[in-house]
Image 1: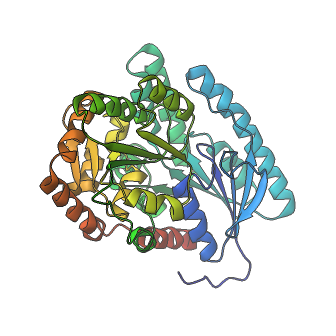
Image 2 (image 1 turned 180 degrees about the horizontal axis):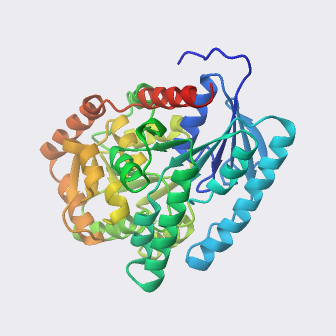
Length: 404
């Protein structure tokens, strides 16, 4: 990507409360694209495991500032998590501001609270960018349902989303459905809206995957890549693996799980309780150089995110990455996921662990079906024109209009 012409290197600060960086792969790709285009980039995010515990570090020319965070669940848990996270982020911002100018604050949701810091940044000349990873009103409905607290949280998240849209000089969304929400619900004009799709560096992934396909003499391998949170459906996959072992006792299979999150310890305990710890391998967080060859050896990958209003409109990063590795995927009936996977995806008709187990058994026992899905997976990203090269260009073009 060509570097910009500039009289002074612009400084962009990315705020990410949801995941440690570089575990948040979308944020990491955005940061790297901005650095490559000539910007000075700082990311403020929580600490994590597996090499993400340092308070300050510079990795691939991206400055990373981290703070301690105790990820929590439940309504009170989120308040306990978000309040100190916002205070730590604000403290790092003040420290940064005392050392160098900040030209843009790039706030990634969830939560939809960074507009508060964006207002402060705008007061001293910084532009505010709202990077909407999640549609939080739909996410609240999925988590809390139609109970009184659910309705209250839906109203609150709609107001915070509205404030984020209104404060932003630029709104970044991951797909066309989110763009429609921003236009209709947020009244965001076209000149302040850009779609930056969740997509990996496809050529790099293909190179890493080359020569690492599934072996004919190995156990049947299922793969999972991504966050292991309470809403990501990994528990469904663990339970499905236990059911699969019961209904297909002669099938030799392994499930490789790559990623991390607050639910991982509980998932490991569940695997032991169900007696399938020998079939599930928790690899933890891995960089692409490690997870691409690992998951390219899978026969099929799994997207176990359950059907909810939020999941229905969201583009799962892992789904596009499965395709970049040439792997087909099993999925529940989700509109956006079906649109992305197309003929490279097999829909689990019954949205349950039992339904997923039956579909896993079906694909493991049907070689012609698996071959058909695999061929489709190899061509799908090209058909969609999905790649980080394209997404990164759109990101840089938007920033050039915003602050250059």
